[in-house]
Image 1: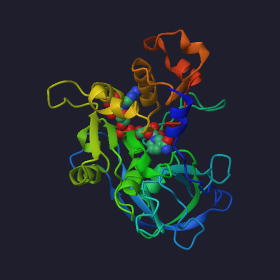
Image 2: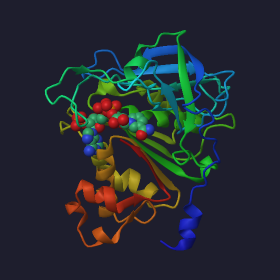
Image 3: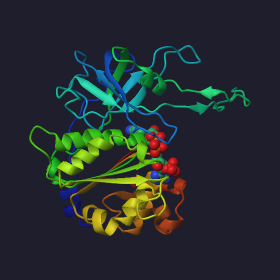
Length: 331
Ligand code: NAP
């Protein structure tokens, strides 16, 4: 790819404000909605909610952009008697907020239900009681009317570009990683200046169909707009043709020639990934196989002579970096 092509396809991101409210002095928001985000009859053990927080009258009002995160400080103190550290949550709300005026933000917390595992020297190696974490269960427990300490916003690259219609979009998510793509799709299709003319693809990976978060919203977009496409990668259910469940990267690979390849290899394509870190490695190998690496990732010399199918996770973590058309938020 020539330098000219790279410059032409370079997304220009908006200037955003960050850390207007810091964890040292959080502001108070009020929960205005909390509802289950999963479908009835769910099969998996996870509990996910959609929680909306009114931030009106605080310095955060009108300042949270789709793709950014905000912080929540849980009440109480940690094991050392210090206030809990801030936890970050991806915004699920559009830039104009759930209310259209930037006064109500939302997020998609998932309950943490785990067993304690020793983390540091001095932790009892035999200890293994129920571990509920600090913040996500607290956020899921909040009732409408409850007050909550919030900070933010944070993030300056995982954003939509300034000129929406100059690019086409592939959004890949696993689980709660779908939150920022709900925000971005709302910005793209419900913008006051009208819906985008760009091609927009959402690829959502979950264990079961009942875990498809915001499924109705994405189905409605697909029904309403020809340029919106919704792909479901359900990993633990048989597909309609009887084949086994699949991951996001496998779905993108299967539909590469017909759907994703033409976008990714054009100079309009942008791709965003949010969710489990494993998804990123599958995509790196797929992009290497399809030889579309330049615009999306830099492969350091240490890996250049190793066949992509032999790359291990540690090598990919160390020697591959996303470039100007790949935006990644994975844990
Ligand atoms: P989940 O509902 O358990 O769904 C995860 C899906 O991804 C499952 O279908 C799983 O399949 C599949 N999967 C497992 N390994 C994969 C791989 N290597 N490639 C592709 N797919 C793979 O997800 P969740 O519990 O909500 O977890 C979401 C993750 O996103 C969390 O780690 C969270 O921290 C992160 N997240 C990050 C951000 C951010 O960075 N801003 C925001 C939100 C969420 P099987 O289980 O069937 O193997």
